[in-house]
Length: 384
Ligand code: SF4
Image (cartoon, rainbow, N blue to C red):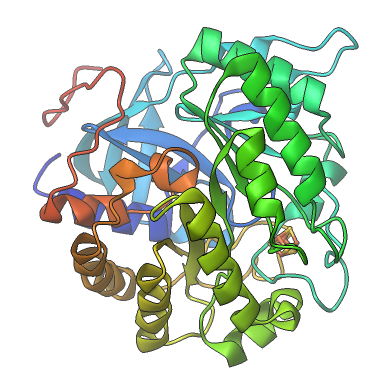
């Protein structure tokens, strides 16, 4: 890359997004879904990144990506000045397949680099109510016909086996809306994970709200789940009450209890929480939350807000690049001190890391992770 260090580039691209004329099939850009979304996948040198490509704010980004006709590479510019060549993740082979009854595989699961990801149940008890999480766009994907309402264990197992065989999937990341206020989907997610393990023998991360019975964690582990996401999203309780009222009603203290029980079952570094930057919190509260997580063996997956179309925050402004960078610079040494490095995660968002630039800051503290199957050195201007 020309005179732009990787950390700056990663933070700026993830916070500001990139403008692109995207002529690829629509399934290759993740739109909607639970939690942060609406991103494309790039490789910069040997670092994978998901980069926002939709949303009002992306139109104001100084970054532009001009795709090569091959679809494998693109020229990245910043304010019209050349930055260098980036590699576009190849179109997954499973996107050309469908089930016997005609459901395209891409409506069941999407490849996030080398991880198969799926929102198992599109329904969430909070969606469309005063308890809806402001940053979430789960209700939009079903409306625009990009997915199906519920993925069965059998269909997900079929797609996972194909993803492993054809696209080299290394793990499966399963998220969901909360279908009820009791087990929060734990029973169904456990059955899905068991089917995937049996058919594809891939490590599975499940992301749910904490169920009422924390004994579900042991049953999940017995079914083959290897990592768990319990996403509080915001540490500051006032901000949490405003932007994620449903989660606030469950209570931050319940999340702390659930984190501890989950780490007892899955081990340190295999349990994670998202913290989203740019929802009105201050930096100190983020660091307090990260410390609370790290002290309990939970990896804090810190990401900038992506104001996704369909979310309440869709017209919000993402956090400043300086703020995101300051947080990453403060959190990376805390992770290193606790030996909670992303390279040790067995499955899920922490293993992938493409949605957060935190791992590029971890590298300063000994994280040597590189999951690019075909590293391609990128050196300055590239041939057309
Ligand atoms: S709990 Fe919040 S983030 Fe998760 S699906 Fe429901 S509304 Fe979206």
